[in-house]
Image (cartoon, rainbow, N blue to C red; front, side, top):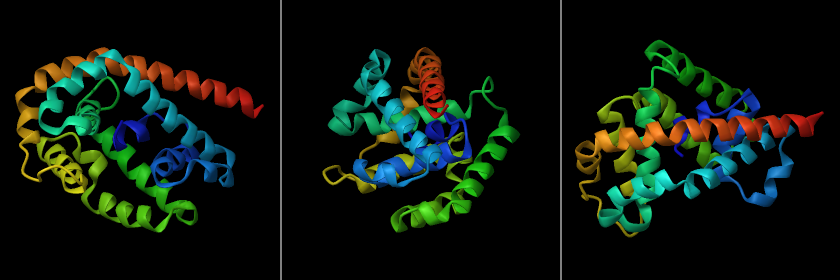
Length: 198
């Protein structure tokens, strides 16, 4: 899953920090953080494992894999953020804006735990309000181009955004079939983490 999904599937401010840190630290370093941040790291990894194994996600990857091969999962993740951001059963537009601002505030308040490369990314994320702008096509286009730019072995002009637009209705159906399962899984993992804390 991508940034918005991870930020939404959290149950405390500390978990928000952990969810964002998970891809920026070595696994063995996770124990150096406070328990609630560790829980966020655990939750992030459980979400990614569940997502990678879900049959609906396997189908969604087939849309992108002819063009981007092993990077298909990254583009599915970005696509899912678009549908999360437009899911009014989760939040309306003002609520998503409030969510985005809260996430940036929490991350900045925990600045001492953030590695330098993440701080630089957070500055750009907040300045351009990535989390909120996943709800529009241009925000997703920007994010997909970022993936292309970072991918070592992909041509930067691959029309992956056009592929997203062409298959948006099908991807919406995949989201509808997948996200309730992921949300329930995240809630279950959080419940287990809270039991461990008692």
